[in-house]
Image 1 (cartoon, rainbow, N blue to C red):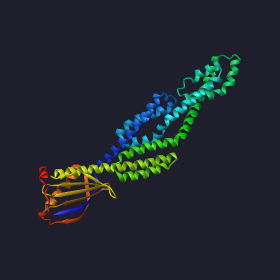
Image 2 (cartoon, rainbow, N blue to C red):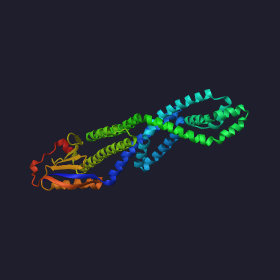
Image 3 (cartoon, one colour):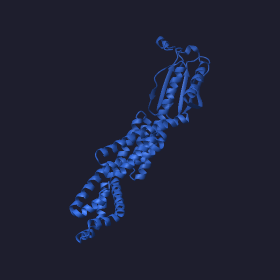
Image 4 (cartoon, one colour):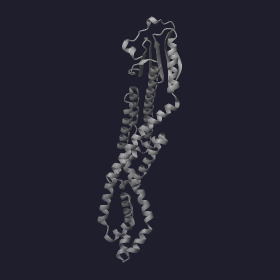
Amino acid sequence: MSRIADRTWEIERERRHQAYLSRIRSTTSEFVERYETILADVRRQGLDRYVATEFRSLESTLQRLRSLLHSDPERARDESRNIASDVHALPRVAREAQRHAVELERERQRRAGVELQSVLDSVFGEIGDPVEREFAYIEAATLKDDLTARVAAGTSIERIRQDVAQQTARIREQAQRQASEWKAGRRQAAAPEVQAQVLRDTRDTALKAAERNPAALRALSAAWDAVQETDEASAFQHALAAASAQADDAIVNEECRRTAVRAIFESLQKAGFAVEPPRRETGESDRVVILARKPSGRQAEFRVDLGGELSYKFDHYEGLACKQDIDQVLPMLQQLYGIQLSDERIRWENPDRLSRDARPLDNQENRHE
């Protein structure tokens, strides 16, 4: 008896879900490490104080992502995508903020009188963010004429200091808003360059994992092209998420197929077959082929594709021996490896196969039995 049949295969839902989460956890971890390196470089260059609020916020988010990688990798992935542009923009914004603050400080020191400057320094010098501090000085400069006149009239510096302090809250609030708007403008100006960097990082990570999957590579290339045509920030994020999801699906599909191939390989071995290393067939279809034989010459061949299709052929059998091997191998796939088979379609079956058609293995192959 010989049989050729087609089946559909599927990894048990929970096992597939775990493979999916493992993929997300792995890629998100790569991005978190990359983000941490960027923040470390900003701090090493002493630029973090020019983007103090933004730096602390991103640092806190990365700490949370580290925890979420274990407890909720999908949420970690989503938050990672949300901060990608901000992280990549941070070094550029920090450098521009440094230049801006230094220029404003030089100009202020040139114009301000010594006594008035000492008053302003006592009130605003404690502001940690240099950009915010310089905006506070600029806002306080509206008081300059009045304060200068009062100094000239003999009003004590202490009294002037008290009067300025009463307006500190308003000035600092306005300065904080102005600094935030200024930095937002710098991030917006950097958006095209930042989006290109985010796209490169995400694409390279996905393509590296899919490099052995020609079908996935073709699909992903089309997806990345669609992302590149998107300029508006929210549309870019949506397109990037869609392309990344497509990449994850393709890679998880390949990982699940590897699990199925490994299960078939080991099940055949347990059934007494000598199994050749799996080989990949590419072209119009993308299939992995597993060939196995017994010393008697009985043969088994499995072909597994990414879409859930599996075909098998048991050949060179006599009588019911074929069915016995099939009934031994296929149940193992589900019982031991969680591979669910359904929808069997027998394409060819010969119940009267004669033993003389069998082709024994040579002596060397017999020794492996």
